[in-house]
Image 1: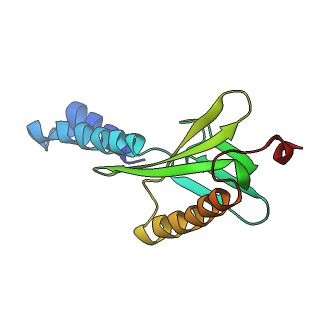
Image 2 (image 1 turned 135 degrees about the vertical axis):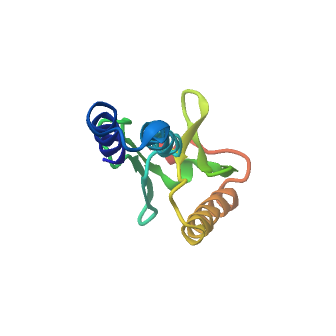
Length: 147
């Protein structure tokens, strides 16, 4: 909306009023920069559920057509480890899960819009699952767990 408003004011200023002068280009540049930062930060909505025997991750955008929503659900025992990476204003959660076919798969979720408390709660919950998995099977996951 900000970009559209800036574009309308810019065109009205250029073709009708001409009151702002050379500063009118900022009406296009500033919203464009804000939109790039908004898009770079990734999906705004992150949902995590660890109740029961499965882990559920949902990551989607508030603007539906920008990015395809991510939704993954898998049993807790498949979680091998996780990592949270922070670069400037970007924060990414990498989840490594066990797969029969490939050995392990890494899933990526953008969690830039979570607060520090929410990230700490997420880490705490995932630590519990990883610790439980290591205690149950320290070196391998048996085929009996997949039946």
